[in-house]
Amino acid sequence: MNKRFCAGAMLLALTLLMGGCAVMSAPAQEDGAGADESLSIVSTSAAICEILDLLDYDNVVGVPETEKELPARYDGAQSIGAPMSPDLEIVKSIDPDLVLSPASLEGSLSTEYNAVGIDCAFLDLSSVEGMYSAIASLGALLGRESQAAALVTDYEDYLAAYQGAGGEAPSILLLMAFPDGFYLVATEKSYVGNLVELAGGENVYANYAGDENGFVNINAEDMIQRDPDIILVFAHYSEDAAFAFMDAEFADNETWQYYDAVQEGRVYYLPSASFGMSASLSSWKEGLAYLQPLFYGE
Image (cartoon, rainbow, N blue to C red; front, side):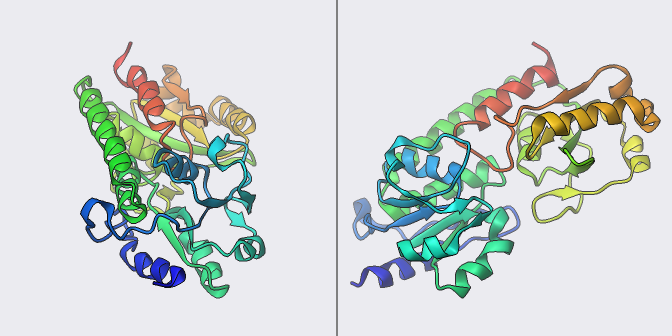
């Protein structure tokens, strides 16, 4: 079978169901038979590189430019530019069988990929559950079922133990701050919102219609009426500047003085290393461990 045709056929099985669902499983194979383990892959995300590494997959030919440390396994792979805007000329010149990107970027990247004839799939990294569903599907697609199953089992065991250690759920207002002077409210459909939910917190904007990544602009009067027990702040980039803006906002904008959480010092800043924009195998447990004492005490 032609390798390119094989990749195209497998892509039909790797269809993404949007709205919080994960990548569908590839057709069942007996003992991995028929799985094409030689597919050349470009990953545009450090989180996806990490997944492929833990699946023991070698044939990754392109990786993103990022400050995050990428697996040593892919030291020889071609750099394909920024995660949010990969250089399509470079990607096309590599001629991969498949490009993998986060589903949060599908709206901006799918048309560009299709325009230059690049086979692509978008993985749901907007939640921990979605990430592990994607891992299971990639394991089936790439002939790495046993590695994927081990990762999924570890996830299920950790989450069962963590959820058993909770208490009364606090109400949470979750804000994503930007260094240029504004913030957005994060719903439970965002990745950090998903971590808050897994940790037992009740997002005061749960089930609220946000954008495709789970964020929404809310007026201050509405937020005051929600009266959160805790306010959590995180940043997408330039963490120091973004947090400095929120510090000044809490101190200088008298509206925030109506919040008990502000008056009583229950405002917490979440480190970007553990609270990014998408799920990561290396950080989701750290995120839950960080939230537990904030929600329930030491």
